[in-house]
Length: 255
Image (cartoon, rainbow, N blue to C red; front, side, top):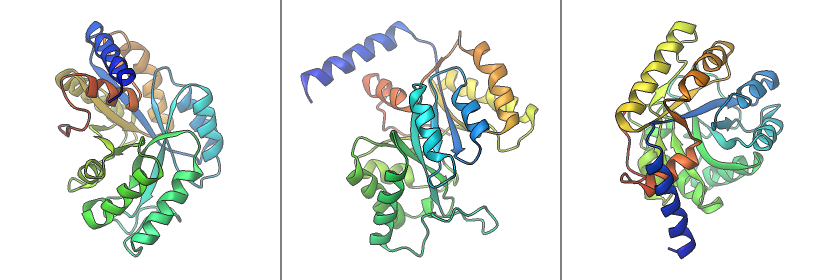
């Protein structure tokens, strides 16, 4: 490890020691289909992360908008769901693909969204359960850019995506809370409070939400009021802080 990197980690550790507030990391998924809601999500107060769907009408525009506003962009990588009734992205990775096809598709999707710092799975409750699918996916991400990280959205409790990302040599992290599995205001407020509790208990917690009108309403209401007691960090900075602190960035989180 270079002396410059050691100095950087030391500076991060000192910074973290100076501010002991719990960390709340927010990821907004599914950006690309609505320009207005996508921009509204990107313009939320705080240092958040935005998962862009490849191939959607406004994907590249919103990725550039987020980058211009100093926000972190990741690829929202579509994968096969266990539910046949689930919305199916035409470019989703699926079980019919062999390793060469998975690799080619992953590289194409990674290249389609500018400014990405990491990847998380869109759906994938089926594909993420199998190491023989996840291994070539993670190897492909690393081959494309070894500095990318992987967030396991945990759409299945049997997901092996996090473990396979680590085995491939990627920095990896897992989701703690879904804010808007139910899209009503009171449910989202409850999940937000659960997110706060987990952050307080664990030191940091990751929540995933979507650019729904109801979710944006709750976030506009709660984020400013929460910022005094908690810190909001993009995923790459959370990973860096965990690496610089007592708990390694790659250690699995509690769910």
